[in-house]
Image (cartoon, rainbow, N blue to C red):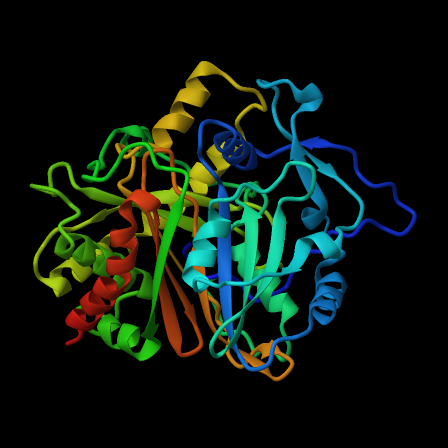
Length: 434
């Protein structure tokens, strides 16, 4: 998800003393779309954030106490999804409940077959509808332990999850200045999409890849740790100026797909397109939990020259209209009426099809270093997004401290791709270096 998240300041959500807890309320359109998507067919919109720590783990009671102290006042984490009267076509709503049960939401897990296998298992399990849809798992690793935040995507996006994680940790480093503040929705002169741009955002542009089709219910996960110095060196590969880390990630993913033979024949007709989430929160204020992003399609070039691919992607993502398009899309989605209809449902299915985008690609930077829990230090973060109904591939790059974690999620039928792509992406990053 680009741009990078803001410092870990959460907007206050606790009701005033003596105030009544709010009643059930309709979900925002983006939440509702993802909630309904999970409840159709075999799609599971659970996603996971994995954080690796070096050092001794906290005890389970200590971790539960920490979660209660630092997350317990956020109403978002007490919301339960549902539909009024259990009517299948009713607009879904969030129902605030009592403070969350730490015994249910914070659990100790084991990983007898390895952390990747356990993460893939948890990624494929829907969260029950009777409780707020999130859990924090404490897992052992060879170097220390891992925390795995498992959540329904209707509840939290990537920026929300990282902000929650940072709020849980000790001794946060001073935040690195992020991107310049963006106008908040609702101010004068909101961003707009012209008719041509609006039509272009709806037309089929992406190439279905050879493995596209209905995804099976199981998941496969692979990841690789890349020194941030390698990403930084690749950013200097362009003579026209320093490329963004996001462009390096997208160009490397394009090259890895090409090297894996996953783009099929003549991949430039009509082309491989990545769906790239873009954060649309106000850059001045604290981070508000929930889903506050829009997606922009980015063409992934099929050139055999790594630097040429980087130049093409960097040029596309640096255009001023890139962020404006995301903000305009977010305003359009937020203004939709809270009801279902044939056109809206059809557009939702289309946006999840391979004709709209070939795969999901998301990159996030934490802008933090030197954080941890007690004596244990946070050394890496990885994101595992859900898959779409017919898109069996999602790729992420999460940057923290001295490393970036490249993670790949596929369905179980394409587990070989999950095992191979992370190392290919690292090779492509290495090949870009000047």
